[in-house]
Length: 200
Image (cartoon, rainbow, N blue to C red; front, side, top):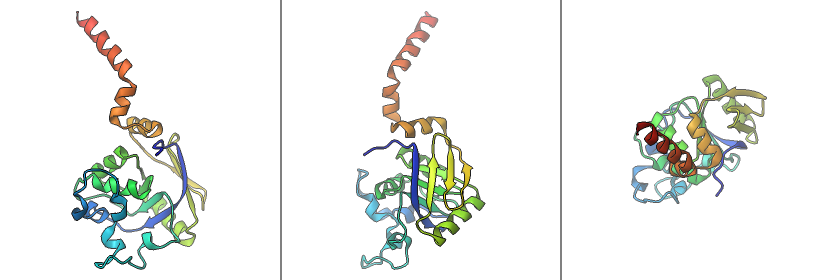
């Protein structure tokens, strides 16, 4: 599966709920697995399904009108426990980016480590996105990582976003932390050798 993130243009799934915590993203009873696969089927499990396992009518992930690789969520997304499984579930479901006006720091980093881009926008821009998507579920959002720019294609309005330069490079090259180190192994070894010579 290609993990490189350059420019993503997609419709979006709106979830205008604030303070969504990691237990709501992936309930604790599903944390027994040790691999990342399969968590997507239980993303927002207690909101998507009733106790009998039937889809809850009205929940956005059960509404075929809303599709796409971008999740647009309310303020303070990913609060609560630090479980990385929440990011696993988001990625495994097929989301490549989450847009919100605020992310819990640990969850934000967990998303980045799992090749999901967290995009922080202003409250006004987020509200506009929700409005555009609700008015027309086929509304597309473009996320341009090299230029750190997100655009609401329905209105043409754009906003810049921040990202750690190191994580930006990892996402654009599709590298996790270990792969990044291996890629730069020669430069690291040359640097260490130079230091040794300076100290001798």
